[in-house]
Length: 131
Picture 1: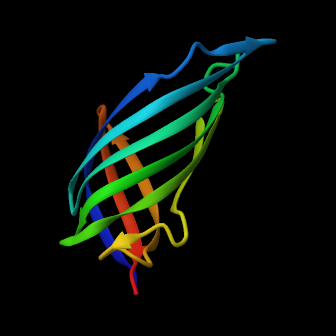
Picture 2 (picture 1 turned 60 degrees about the vertical axis):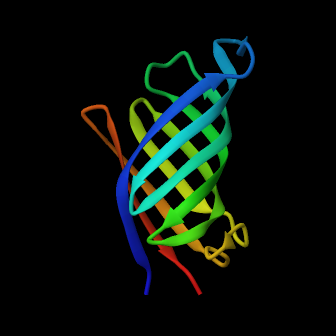
């Protein structure tokens, strides 16, 4: 039976290089620094690649993020893999735990992470399983 962790997080993104553009599509690289609060008390560090199109609301990104801290009282780390697209404002987002990336008391973790942004604040719901 999966467990569910809920809470909030903040994120800081910094460009790692000047974006490259060709035919109106801009490719970029960003660093991610996150702080999770709630059932997951942790920091996240990662790298993100982006593609911004000339059509408002259409873009894509992929990212890898290492999360280290405490999940429902269990210490360890794991890695999230992100894949997201926006199609003229319609968002599709998949954030999953990379298999076998868990360490410490989080070894063997699997799961899906969902984000909800309300009035500029980031909320998460993390459905996960541990052996």
